[in-house]
Image (tube, rainbow, N blue to C red; front, top):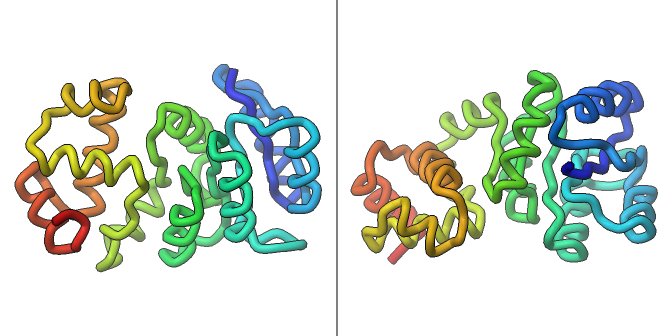
Amino acid sequence: MISIHIADDHTMMVELLIPVINHSGIAHVTGFSFRLSECRKSLAAAGQPDVLLLDINMTDGNGIVFCAEMHKLYPQMKIIALTGHDEYSNILLMFKNGASGYIVKNEAVSEITEAVDAVMRGETYISRRMEQVIRKTTRAAVILTPREKQVLQFVSRGMSNPEIARQLNVELSTVSSFRKKLNLKLKASNPVELVNNAHKEGLIE
């Protein structure tokens, strides 16, 4: 069972999420914090969970800065941004600072468990609303996680999905998910177009 800690200063949001997660069948909430300082102490004392659901704007600090801090301290812990903000700049900063997922609060609550399941498989999760924001943003292709960059490099070498899966020691479905995300971010519909667009963006030589 996947363990989750929620860091959010909205009491109602936390009270809503706990039963949804606990009844999902794949995860359970092992702790929650209403302040970043509380979250910091809790993770240090009780050990890090598998996933941290993190609000960007907290009363006692910046969740983006906190994300970078936690990612450095606990690199194995997956961090999913849970926020009311859908600005492109925020998603860019969160992924650059170690987040594995980004969800906007006013979307379906079911996206939480979808995101948790995805990041625990090594995937990057971007909520449906944020995917629409990315499509409208010219520089969307710059949002590549380290693993996505790896997959892109393998694609540029002409490797197939099964070959990439063996190289990364992951499931074939995981590689397929990465390929779909890369196609979306680089506005490509096939491997040749993907590599060409990546070259134009300076992502591969």
